[in-house]
Image (tube, rainbow, N blue to C red):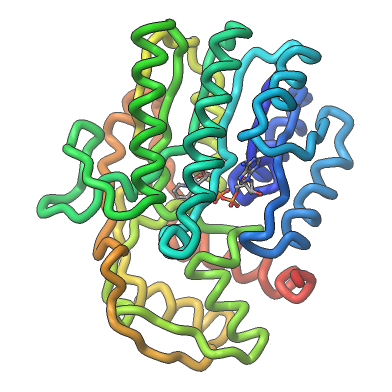
Length: 319
Ligand SMILES: NC(=O)c1ccc[n+]([C@@H]2O[C@H](COP(=O)([O-])OP(=O)(O)OC[C@H]3O[C@@H](n4cnc5c(N)ncnc54)[C@H](O)[C@@H]3O)[C@@H](O)[C@H]2O)c1
């Protein structure tokens, strides 16, 4: 089985590639190594992957159709996992163009080429943020979606175009609504690593809404086990949407208190809630659990312990 994984130098892509190459699966990894956050961190992740001969890297932007096509043409690819995207809600206020280019144009290219080269299955990243603010939790996949920013809108668009490509051309795909993934080698623009980096670099951490928002934190190794199971399931013919979440919303302030004990506390500056951010994410994972028979979610204390052990060793290496 040959798999093309886009966003392979990113947080989730790195872990997925690392897991699969260790199982001797051939991986073609694509990433443009953009500078949205530390390029050095992306290069360190990549250097780990490149040690395995089953991993082949292409530095490439998925919005460049002709270059992307060459990869499909020159390699026998069975499955595509599209994790490349301009991520982050707040940055979409500053630079919406990147979201249209990478997330919409780039994903369209992935679908077009998957159609042309008869790809058996596409897994692609959507996001919990497509739901927007809700009155009732946990949210299930058939709940109405209501994006609040350009990032979430680009993910909604991905789901819609994937559904149309399935109905019109039979391209099979699964949209993954990830809920706040955390863990080792994580993203420095996201809560936990950002908080620990502030402590390490003696900087002030800006905390919105006094940490009174809730996130359905989902541990990276659980996400990888789920993705591996999804890759192994019989190739479905339809388009499917799945929440990828632990179904366990936790208050941000509670998480930070736990990190204070395990890693240390930076100086904190308080700021009011940002209007583009949702107050709470809490997904139902019933559909996921039923589909792949997965029930074993990591407890937050165990996930945080692993993360902080990693951080004590590696955070200082990230420039
Ligand atoms: N981490 C989370 O909690 C979370 C939550 C919801 C959704 N997601 C989605 O899951 C996917 C992976 O997230 P992540 O946390 O690993 O993010 P990430 O930013 O660490 O990884 C994305 C990678 O894609 C690359 N990339 C961006 N645009 C590209 C382009 N046009 N061409 C080629 N490469 C490009 C980046 O350089 C980066 O290495 C993203 O689509 C993200 O929106 C993540």
